Image (cartoon, rainbow, N blue to C red; front, side):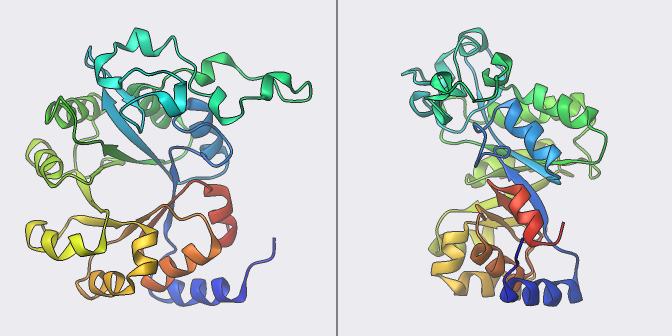
Length: 277
């Protein structure tokens, strides 16, 4: 693959001060595979992703599932709301067909294991990471607002505790756009890394005095592109930066110039190729 000269130079400058950023698979290898399915995460691992990102929501019967939207219209063609449904009800739905709705009519399409299209529980994803043959990290985002409030973070910390993953050596970190959610995680598991996600550049001056110095900051790539002052302020403050959702060479160039620690991408294989493997 041909790499642009600007990316190559940025990689060399970045390497002069620190290692390259960690490549995090956003909802799995979700550019090509239905997001949040086991197949998407296995593909990301096979492609070399160093960490997996997922969103979690709590079902009516208390299970954490990997689903981004509060309702299921986009990913399961269902009008249901995750928080009002039991896990068994969710397990009856197809979370994969939306990505390629015509695949059943394509005689040359590879056969798909129906289990790969089932709703993915966080526990199953953690089991997959724990059993993998190399070190893999997790970036877990709790979605808010939700009817269950702080119960989401409590259940998340309990689940991580079942794996012994609540200490400083945990492969997991917790993210949210909710300041209250991050404060809850720190109270429940003081040693867990937390990532304060930033949706808009103008939110940072408000958040800055309320987040601890060791919190990671997670701005979106669009905000870094449109408001370059945000990146400069974060670097000047010595903040560790994790950026979402980085899918192009130009996106990666911005991140390398800032010396970010992690890039969260729908295309982990492409990011690794741009970074040289």
